[in-house]
Length: 261
Image 1 (tube, helix red, strand yellow):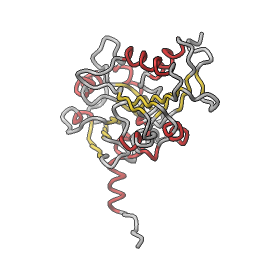
Image 2: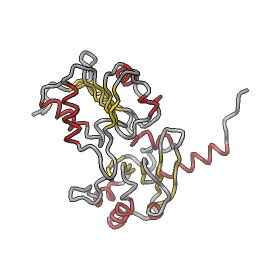
Image 3: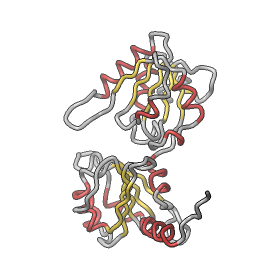
Image 4: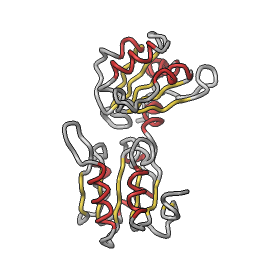
């Protein structure tokens, strides 16, 4: 049984409450529909990684509410759900703005369910996930018919929890592993992957602040990831395709684009 019934929509006929994907960071990677909804919003509830440039698209009179989760204390999901339901009942145009895609490790489904329990329709606007955009921005194809015919997207946020990812299964899948929210727990993740049989010399790339002017890329191998000088926000790419990041950089350096005067 569908717990949200008919209360989730991707149509334009009812956009009073919208769950909008903000994409990977660059405002130019927002969808046209996302831009239109942000510009028409009365209230925007936004995550920590949504940039100031994207928030600037909202009307000057719009109320901007930071509901991002941070280490050491932030809104709990239940409090956020209650706030969203309360605002949705006000008759205002509400945009819940979430980094990347709202349904990929963004708890968007939980917010839709909370609204649905109160009979509130929610329009869902997909966004470009950093799981795909960050590697692409660094010149890394997550699939390649010669070396990676599959890609697995994993969260590293709960690497040590009792409901953790089955890292042994991930290590045996082959192809590319894209790891989100894994920087802080990377040592434990590497330990588990190597223990499950993944070669410590497997290529790895870490794309930080992807698609923004601050973007930078670390390239190395799985063993070197533990002590690498990397920080969040970042996407970790594990597998043969990760070597494409350094290859792309070398090609660009060797064959720079001509300058037009």
